[in-house]
Length: 346
Image (cartoon, rainbow, N blue to C red):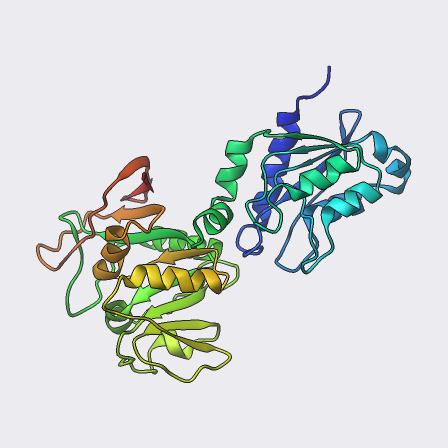
């Protein structure tokens, strides 16, 4: 009995996840090649600028299977590209290899592709089946779809609050989450392309915003400093890696430090996300204070929120942000802290 398409597409999604944190601004994509209900080749896009999933999979097929590629089926969780970027079009490679059937989870939202890859394959006589596990494929690449469909990065809000609803004190940093929660946050940082904080968080907490507790690529650091008044002895300025500073003033750009001028009398969140979109930033983890977080909530510019609630009580201080228009999807226990995941519902 023939194995259903969904089984092989699930394998694509499993493989594609291995590109988490390394492929942005490209999507996470994997490819599986099947002949007579047997996987004869598979691969995934491993890092930005590297070979695409289809190239990896086709290259992995043993030489003795080359004569039967025309009878094989190629599975891929995103429409094959049809333009020259850092690599040649994958659709041309599929055609050149004589593969006659392709199964795709979903269309590529990138305007450079947007259905043209499938049309190119079909024009060459290839049978293309679409929509297999499309919902799951969109969820996997929610950052990529949001970036192209909404023309802004995917926004994740994160904070820790006390049992009585405070995020911290006005004058000093108060760690609220436990060591296990902190390690989880570093894992989250490895999965996003950038991390954003505001003036007060930089001044009071002096965070490094790195992956000290996890392996991966350090995210681009983003700082909102209206008057450029923060001391450059702070960690966010001293560490290696790219830093983008949003201000109403201008500064001298370097290889490491980029200044972006915005109008603070207008909706700064819209301006920030518009600039980050043009910078090619696919996703942003916002770890700022209550003012920064509430600004994005008020503007409706967020996609999910991850909130730790601890047993600690502060009795006074800075009130935690208040979410609106959301569904609570998951509640987890992290060594005594509770973690709630919220999805923004428009």
